Image (cartoon, rainbow, N blue to C red; front, top):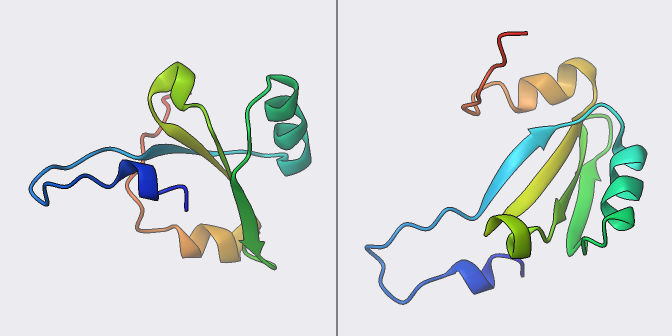
Length: 89
């Protein structure tokens, strides 16, 4: 899986695996990631709730990047308790 390379032998070590980003247009994001030559090793979704993909951005950032498109209220409820940075825009 995309998590296997991040597992360390020492159980006391914590390693950041990915950062997640909410997006408005899933297909446009996939096309953009492909145009930038990023591999998409995992993608999927929950119908009526969300679509997601992981881009292999480790060569540039050291981490994977997760992109999530939430479907209205059901998706927002699903992620309601996930900590996030809120822009001051």
